[in-house]
Image (cartoon, rainbow, N blue to C red; front, top):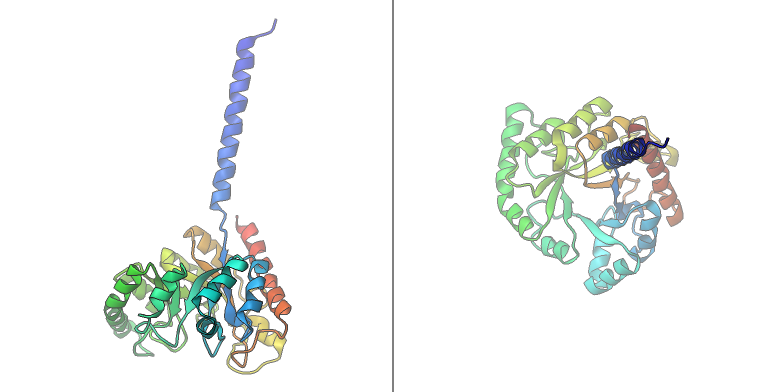
Length: 308
């Protein structure tokens, strides 16, 4: 005899199992870190921006970070082309202006750059900190605190324009060490002061870097996928110079990506290196630059799959 109750029970159990499986699948998918890639224009040297923009989508990115001289000259190209023409080029290639890098202007010289960023819907400007160098301990904390105090009017303006000013831990600067980064986050007067984290300028210790990422958390606005390799201050054979790129040098980015996933990182990721001399592309041909960025991206994506 056919038991309709058993059939209903079986159906309800199967439905519940399906819904539960779907929920777990969505949870697993949501926990997977998806890097939001951005292309640093200086990776292509002084190449015309009209030649760079078609490459952006090929690297899995949808945004560009424009750099000024000496590393690139695309910020100057924006001025030469004019905002209307530059905006038209961005639209043609489906690229947004995600970041403007401005070490030259510094954190106190961005008053004209902030409204420009807002007009392009750009939410991030990267620069360096200003202050004494070579400090440690209490002196360093006090100097970082003073810098944060000096930044208050500039951060108020940044907030007005919807921009975060991200400070890179550049070598030989006020903010160049793990302690200085932690104090910058602890003492910052506004969330519109962020971190542009460059592993290149820090000890090449995966455990230390991963711990630092966990400490900095959502204050990180830009993560440079960039390692020290053999450095970028003197001319080296190209194979040695390229050791700065993820997947080529000795640094294991796996623990760093795991830490980024743990803090639910949602900022930009810029696959990066510096060539010697500055202002040249990392490789001679535009297509080769794109291929090298993709080589590193494939490495990062393999690690992401392993950590998910």
